[in-house]
Image (cartoon, rainbow, N blue to C red; front, top):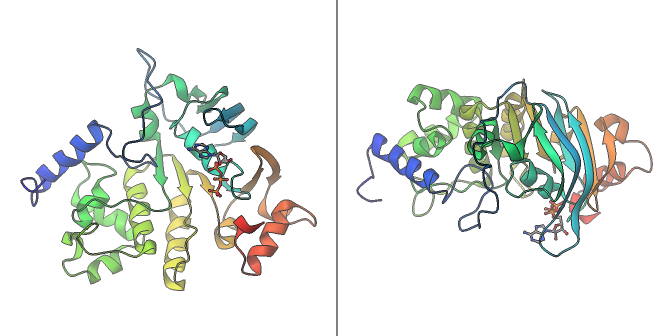
Length: 297
Ligand code: ATP
């Protein structure tokens, strides 16, 4: 790692190497997680179109535990922005993990633009979506390399553009060496909000038709919160968005909200429609408006 330090091309080979061996990538995969899915022999690449997503009778359980999802049906037209909400343990993260094919479904199927995600290459599936996790893990490298991670062949100009679109530019310029500041372990520490904006910059750089967002639950200061909202709104333009949403401010930007409870979709509609009296969504909304977390419902 020390030998590679300092040179852009060599830094890129490090990124390629790491991605090649599957130690880490820009999805929610974690180091050491066992590979549970495999490409079908001769699997074709996913052909990207508009980013239509469909879950058909999807059931899933982790090992011998009970079902985390039971016969879920969801149709998301290309370009729709969908927020997923629900109590803790309802199955929200499982839904977005299955869409990334971190696990194979036990029943039913998930398709993107009409193609079953289990029948296309994982590589092409990964290229079709940008994942913005709750807390991105930064490489102990420069800010530049950390953004470039989403697309190793990106030019510097493309990286600056992505950083601006994600409202990162200003805070990056304030760092001691700007884009060349080394961050992460033993480097400059970034706040949770700043890290999430680097994640959003990566998503801009990747320019995929589908965005999978796991919104941070942790409290952010008001300025970070506002900057993130602005960058999210921009990122969501013209893309299909599927987001585990925790904040009321984000929810109002969605066309549709799916309320998950005990592994099933129990409510489905626009945020306004779902505010009807007595709905689970309305109850969660009120609790959060009173300053309590959605998870406490
Ligand atoms: P939270 O809001 O707390 O993150 P969630 O709605 O995202 O919750 P999931 O993480 O999807 O819920 O969990 C759904 C169910 O699956 C829960 O019962 C949970 O305990 C279980 N589960 C989640 N991950 C695993 C795992 N890796 N192994 C075994 N069970 C799991």
